[in-house]
Image (cartoon, rainbow, N blue to C red):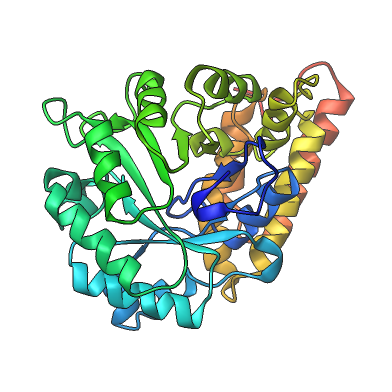
Amino acid sequence: MTGALTGLFPTGYTPLFLAPQAGVSEPSFRRLCRKFGADVVSTEFVSADGIMQGNPQTRNHLIFHEDERPISIQIFGSNPQRMGEASALVTDLFRPDFIDINFGCPVKKIVKRNGGSGCLRDLDLVEKIIRSVVRNTHLPVSTKIRSGFDEPSRDPVTIGLCCQDAGSQMVTLHARTRTDMYSGQARWDEIAGLVDALDVPVVGNGDVHSGAKARIMKETTGCAGIMIARGSHGSPWIFSQARAALNGEPIPDDPSVTQRFEICLEHARNGSLFENNPKKALRDFRKHLGWYTKGIPGGRNLRTHLFEALSFEAVEDLLDQYLEEARGSDTVSEVFSG
C-alpha cells in the first residue's frame, strides 16, 4: 500500500480501518478493536474551530496512547486557513501518524456550518482546505468523502480526483451521498470506479457488516483498504472475522452471550480508565450496552435494567444475573423476558 501508509504494511496486504465516529471511536473502543485486528484506528472527528479555541473537550478527543498506532486524527471545518492552523497544532502537540480530513459527515448540525459533507457542494473549497492542511503539516494527509452531496451532484471520481490533485495521499469513499444518510445500499461500483481513476490508495467504506462482506468488497472493488463503521457497533470481533475472510480462512463464529458480556465488561473497564468522571463514563457507555445486548433473548428488558444502573459494578451484576438465569433454564426468566 502506498500513499499515507507507505511502509506500514506488506505489499498486497489489505488493512482494516476503524472509522472515526463521534461518541464511538473513544480510546477504550479503539484499543478493543485493535485487539481484535483493526490495523488502523482514528480519533473521533474534531472541529478545527474547537481545536484552535482551546476547547478542553475537543482537545481531549485528540489524546491517544502509543499502543494505538497507527492512528489518524480526523479534523473538519469549512475555513481553509483555520483547518491549516489546526493541522499544524495537531501535528506539533499530538503527533498522529497522519491527518484525515472529514468531507463525509452527513449530520445536519455539521453540514449547516458547511462542514463534513457540506463541503462537497463546493469543490473549490475542498481543494483549498486540503492544500492548506498539506502546507501546514509534514504528516501524510488523507480524505474521507461521500459520493456527492445529493443525487444531482453525485460524482465520486471528480471529487476523488480533486482530493488527489490537492495533495490527499489516500481517499476513503463512503459510497452514499449526504442526502442518502445511511439509507439504501452503498454503491460499491463507485468504489471500484474510484480505484480505477486514482493513483493514490482508495479505502472502501459502507455496508461492511460481516467478515464475509469485507472479502466481497475487496474482490468486487479492488480497494486498497476497508473501513468499518456501524458494523463494529457492539461487535469489535468483526475485525478478526474480516481478516480471516480476507485471508481465505474459516470465519470465526460470533462470540457466545457469555463471551460477548466478557468483551462488553472489558470495554467498560477500559472506558472507566480513560474518563475521570464515573457518571459520564457510564452515561457515554449506555449506547454500547444497547449494541452488545441487541438480539439476545430478553434483551429489551435487560437493556431497561442496564440503562437504569448507577455504576459499572451494577452493570456487571446485571450481566452476571442474566447469565445465571440463562444457565438455570432453557429460557431467560421473567426478570429479563418480554
